[in-house]
Length: 251
Ligand SMILES: CC(C)(COP(=O)(O)OP(=O)(O)OC[C@H]1O[C@@H](n2cnc3c(N)ncnc32)[C@H](O)[C@@H]1OP(=O)(O)O)[C@@H](O)C(=O)NCCC(=O)NCCS
Image (cartoon, helix red, strand yellow):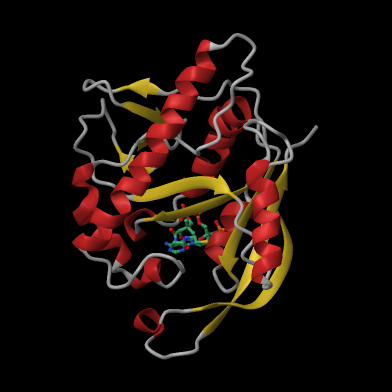
C-alpha cells in the first residue's frame, strides 16, 4: 500500500484551521475537523437510507439534538489528536505518538483554497478496536481493556476504521483514496499503527471493496452480531451479520 511519492501533509486554511488534501485525482477532496455548522449536512446524510442502513450506532431519525450530542465527542477527539500531533512533531525522533485518532475527519469538497464553509460530505475515523464480534461481553471487555492499555505508538494496538460518504460522492473511488492517504500520511508516521480492522454489515459490498482496494483481507463472518434498530429496519428483531477485514502493516 505504501507508495514512492511522499504523502500529503496537513496544511492550514486562511482561518488557521488544519486540513489535509487528497492527492490527484482526488485533490478536490479535503479532510478537516468537524465544525459547529455541520449539523444540517449530518442530519441530511444520517436520514438517508443509503447511509443509515449501513451503520449501527447513529440514531434514526437523526436530529439537531443528535448532532448536538455527537458534536462535542467528534470535536473532542480531533482536538485531542491535534494536540498529540503537535507534541509529537516537536519531539526529535518521534517518541510521542498520536493515540486519540485523527485530527481531521470530515470529508468536504474544496477545489480551491478552503474557506471554512465547505459542506460536510462524509466522515472518516480511526479508534481503538471495540471487538464487537466477541459475543461474550466479559471476554470482549477484557480484550478491549488489554488493547486500550498499550501505550501510544505500541505496535500491538489494534485499531478500527469507520466511514461514510454522502451518496452524491459514491462510486468515485474517494473513500479508498481516503484510507490510502490517511494510512501513509498519518496512521504510519504519526500513530505507528501496525494492525487495523474494519467491520461491515456483511451485505455491504461497497464497504468491503474500500478495504480490499487497500490490501485488507477478509478474516471472518460473524452471524447475528447486530440487531438493527426498529426505527431503521421497520421491524423488530432484524439481525445483521458482521464481516471483518484486517490489515497488517508490511515489514
Ligand atoms: C462504502 C462507501 C464508503 C464506499 O465509498 P466510495 O468512495 O463510494 O468507494 P468506491 O468508489 O471505491 O466504490 C466502492 C464500491 O461501491 C460500489 N459502487 C460503485 N458505484 C457506486 C454507486 N454509484 N453507488 C453505490 N455504490 C457504488 C462498487 O461496488 C464499488 O466497488 P468497485 O469499484 O470494485 O466496483 C460508500 O458507499 C458509503 O459511504 N456508503 C454508505 C456508508 C457505508 O456503507 N459506510 C461503511 C460502513 S462499514
